[in-house]
Image 1 (cartoon, one colour):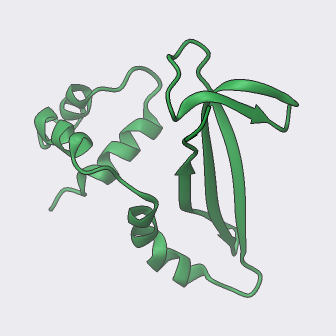
Image 2: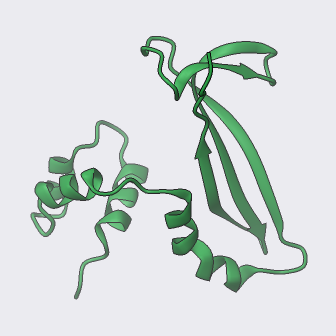
Length: 130
């Protein structure tokens, strides 16, 4: 039986873990079927984009697509109060608390239809001006 792609294995590992996660830990869990070097190379490979996500989920979206389907857009700020400031980790206005928060601002898009939610897009907000 062929092993699932490393992306699927790694995502499942992250979702199922309650503690620290490592490439070595995943390799041990899989009894060496996938080496920690394979996991590390996957994580260090080309940056994943919203286009990559869309290409992955498009067949599922087309399968559940309906007139009642909805595209849901959300923004969230993951607080990082002790991180050095840069274009992504910086001060963002949080409309839910009416204050500035230091962290990473991420816009996400998901498609909901027939009781299924599928992530279809994301964007990390990078500030180009101070």
